[in-house]
Length: 246
Image (cartoon, rainbow, N blue to C red; front, side, top):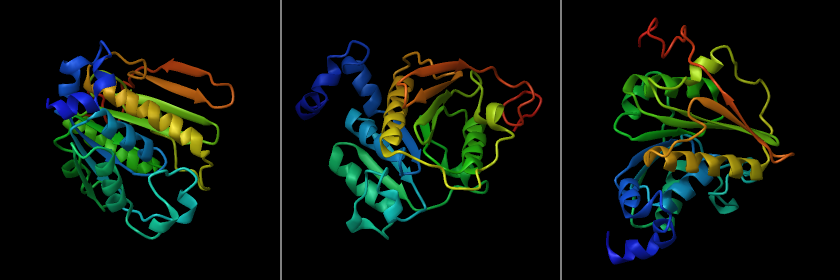
């Protein structure tokens, strides 16, 4: 690393689990963040600040006024503009030493496999349950780990999926349908869960054991309690079971 990078990551380098070796691993890592909204905003800020070397951002939406209570990447001046474009510019400003790219496209079952290849980790930051399932299927197919999070009002959840080792999204949410009404979101909860997702990604990239791997972590914004619920793989999962190969 150069002298500037040593200074930029000075406080991280002091952490025994990171140090110079770990920081180099982060700089050599490549991640895909799908969704640059309420969860994606803190995920992107903190992974860029941590020095993840390559970040690709996908979001097909534009900024709207109703986004601004929780999507801290954006401001009133950017209403109507492509989120992916704005997110790339903002994250480049956070850390000019890393490579940041973006794409305005909607992930579907037709393009997911191509879009998700070539990354060390995927971070779905989405409202759509169906799109989460599509990304899960592609990630399992390619053997790419990913960190999944969700928020509703004062509550949130987090899980890390390592294909072949942990349950996948479909193991747990096969029969869960998309809510018919908008999901209530407190901005600070999106920030809290998104920050925890960024932490889980760093742990994953550095091979630091994480209780969210093979479990659902429930975050209660009213009591400040976190509950870790271990989850077993579903032997009949339509995505990751041996009985149902992709």
